[in-house]
Image (cartoon, rainbow, N blue to C red; front, top):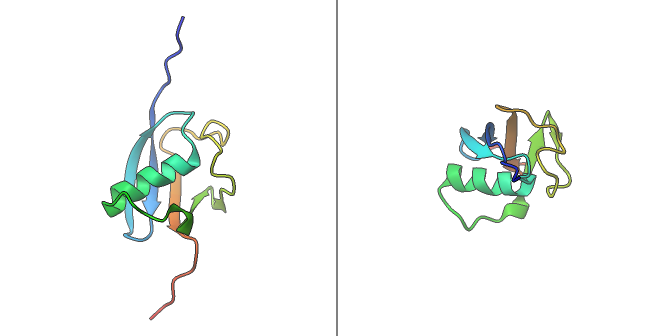
Length: 91
């Protein structure tokens, strides 16, 4: 008997472009993979310096990005935020 992973959607706000993307993920998806997919979709580029961005879930930074969404108890339609690790100067 094989187990079928159930995919569900999560919302990710990418603050560099102030755009929200919807991603279809699985419980085994890592936070690092979620960040990579969200940045690539929102910024339309694939060669991004991923270490220059952080992910927040329920208002707190996810420090270990190898954590799976199942370990964070992520539910369908859960909101994430991807933002630059360094604060941007105000002009």
